[in-house]
Amino acid sequence: MNRFRCILFSLMLVAMAHNQALSAPPAKADYFKTGNEKAAKGDSQGAIADYTKAIAGDAKNAKAYQNRGAVKLSGGDHRGALVDFAKAIKLNPAYAEAWYNSGVARRELKDYNGAIADFTKALNLNPQLVGVYFNRGVAKAGAGDNAGAMADYSKAIELQPSNAEAWYNRGIMKNQAGDKDGAMADVVQAVKAWFSNGVAKASKGDLKGALADYDKAIALSPKFGDAFNNRGNVKKALGDQQGALADYSKAIELNPSGAVAYSNRGFLKAVLKDKEGSLADYGKAIELDPKNAQWLFARGQIHNAFGNSAEAVSDYTKAVKLDPKLSVAYLNRANTLFVQGKKKEALADYSTVIQLDPKNADAWYNHGVVLAENKDHAGSITDFNKAIELNPGYAKAFFKRSLAKSALGDEKGSIEDMKQAAKLGLENARSVLKSRKISWQ
Image (cartoon, rainbow, N blue to C red):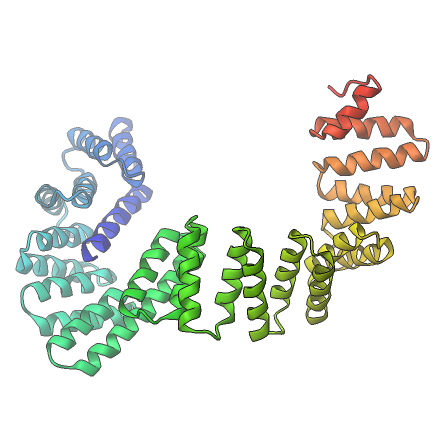
């Protein structure tokens, strides 16, 4: 775990160096730049080769030595990395990052005292290197200096409260010192930090990182229902549907009153075509939180998907009563009512959607369709115009506007719209034009 954090930091330094590289003669600068690019893409061998070429062109390029060392370190070549860091430090004794990474390499080689010295030098040069406290703490623990390790972990926590590893490692130190209560308190904080880090990573799209953090939180706290629920969300996003289902079920087992886990499992069961299971889970979620409009809307969608239009309309209606601004519920209720032949009610709902969301091209289009069926062709054209304005690639809107123009006697305009619909790939439009022997090419 600690080695992973160090490697990650090293690669970050490579990326930073790439962004901050100084200008140099073309041949030298290009090799250093391409080395950074290859390192960022995970091409370790290519990066090392390019850094070596950069060094051959400029033997005093401390950054090239540092970055080559960082790549070697990430690949497990600790001795080779140490040689490169030493060269970078010789060229630039104030190179804090090189001192830091040298400390990492020494620690991996179990030269704990040498690592402590290097980490301390890095801190003296740059006190803002927050990660150094944690890593020096690991080295001190390896050297048997538990008190020093605990002090460094405490400083790491002070500077970065989200450092779950620091909380966990300090907890181990406290446990070894006989402070059971303090150890338990730190482990609880570590669980919270891993959980929070998982939430943050998931929100940024780092799903694998989030999964790893939730795994750690659950390993330390196997009754943490929210962690199971959130891990289920991540697994679902990663395509592991069965893993997600198992996590949601575990979350429900641990917290039977947790409505969110029921709704999440209900959604996934719908995806898996488990109609009864999905409706049962949403029903339980709504029972636990009867004022959640989104879940009523979601259950309405499931009813609709399985052909239960009356139940769908009922849920959509309950949803908009709870949240009168939930335009998507009005839109889907309108679509369902239209299929049921209730055009007047559908038209009213489409109008409401347009008021709530004037940029909803589908609402304008569907409103126009209802007007056209009611023989209000001029009104429908106005709606189709708006739908096309909002979505210039809306093939069906061109097709319907073509029919409306034809109904009003505008054959030239009708043909132009039909051609545009055909160009956009609508087969119905192409069939119409073919039957009339008109080319859309």
